[in-house]
Length: 368
Image (cartoon, rainbow, N blue to C red; front, side):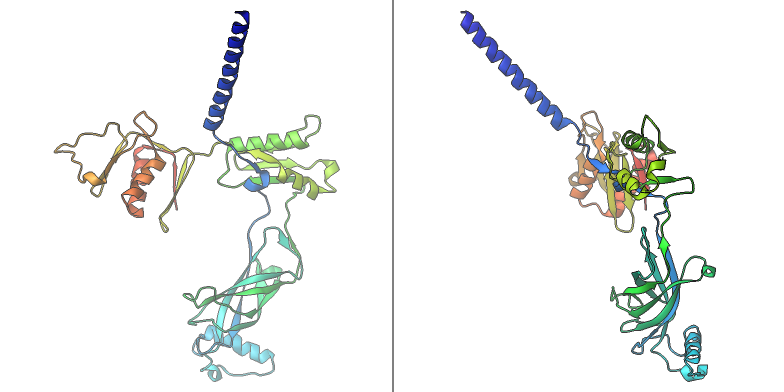
């Protein structure tokens, strides 16, 4: 008898252990998965930004697709260039020069900076009436920064390639820009601080405070607070005195630190031009009946009964949504429903705007 009791007790204990393991597995599956990212994935260093050099030049060698001799903005610099080359001509002599075009050139500098002698791509855009830059060549176009008084930073030259045949008056010169000065990026201010700027998608006071705490735990000595979250966008970090000689190593360590991402803010981003709808976070909509251009979609459960005053205009284009069991719905289900009945993108965007305007869309709506 005692042996049977012990065996039964052991079996019960085994079932309890198995049940606990199953419950843990279910809870683990139900819990939202939060991935770690590096600080560098969601921030940039203040000072690392997009910089542009611009200038103008002449494209030669066009097959009759240039600005033409009557376009004086192109002919005057051509006349001056020939004069400098000891071959002076008068403007009337350039009347038939349709193989030349005046262009704007633009070079985007890398956010990490560039050194003297660096090569970059050049974007070329026609200023005048040139119909195509195909087959053209730029001899030398000076490159300037936002303040031309600082002088020339480099020059652009080379053969122009057309990236898009549908816009033949725009082109690119691969590695056609030669930089003549050092253009470093300054990320450390005069007081020995760097500022981490959170990308818009990650900008939040909670995330900024989390980043500051992670940096302090990893790099602060004796409880020293070297990082402070100024707001949801900026985290200021003081480089310790003993790290300032090798500040690049310190900054690299900071940028490699992992961050556990918080749940994403409920946001709906709409691009009118492309008809794209991006949903982030767990966006919900309140119980509502949507009637738009002959279709009716309801998030009320059960669905309202059609009446003479409120008919369902098209039974095949009417459906009910209730994925959370309390008379509401997830926006993703609404978008899937609109997709199922092939609602055009413009109509989807109009519905989202009206939901947000009426207060039934529980998310931030951003329309580009």
